[in-house]
Image (cartoon, rainbow, N blue to C red; front, side, top):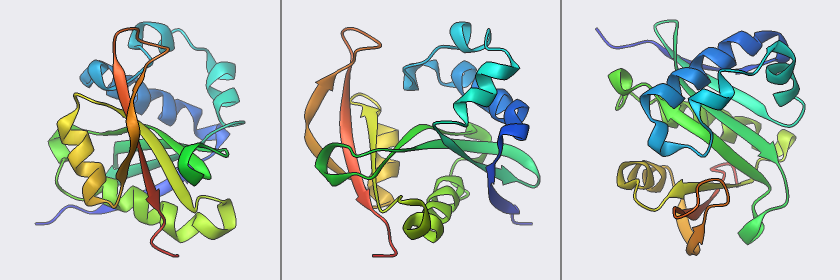
Amino acid sequence: MPYQVSCIELLADDWARVRDIRLQSLLESPHAFGGTYENEKLFDEMQWRNEFGKLSFVVASVDGQDSGVMSIEILVGDFGSTCWIGGCWTDPKFRGVGLMRTMFNYVDRHAIERGWLVQGLGVWTDNDSAISAYEKLGFVEMGGPQPSSRQPGKFYQRMIRKTNNL
């Protein structure tokens, strides 16, 4: 029986859902993020709610279980990006069932009204599986590797994607 995959944008009152999946992502894939579980587990409700003032959070679920997350920040960025995708993660148990595609389909459906026309993101240069997944979604590498300000000695690659609605 195929999985039922869905996707929604969460609101500030859903802060606990964002907290739970973000902390799960930091525990499961600490190597993939600039943030750390040790730091973010200390955030209180107000800190999580404040994140909604600058970021939109999209969550994908499998059979009702939150299994993927991304944040979207409106900004004028490198290479013409109009928003920045961050904190992308999918639960390894459900990789390959279309969670990332479902979240980016959500971005595409709302791109014009929300200003998400050209998405940028950064991915660690040694995260080959993430780079491959982003390329399958239409992202292309732009510019060379950039040094991380959060994790000295690590480098990230900027990638850009134009929404499929253009």
